Amino acid sequence: MRTRSTVRSGVEGTVNEFAHGHGMRRCRHRGQSKGHLQHVLTAIAINIERLSGLPPTGEAPTPRQPTAFQDYLDQHKIPRPKSWRTLGS
Image (cartoon, rainbow, N blue to C red; front, side, top):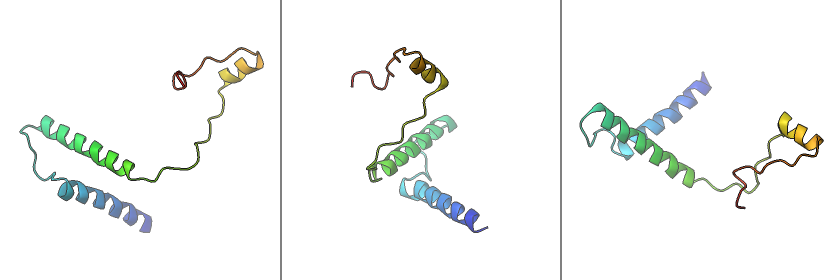
């Protein structure tokens, strides 16, 4: 019961910040689709604002385990293609 109430209090705080801190009680546009778009974009902005306030982590994330295909390539000494994420670095 206690964990449910702590989760609920966190959600209530977020909804309160959204409604009162960012003026979501009133919509700038007429129409449900425009109002929905305003709410979605405001929620994205709040999430970016929250993430930018987090302290950076000092350690790098742990690498993922190689897949079966990557193990096969390594066993047969076939060079692995570079990931698109590491191209250009």
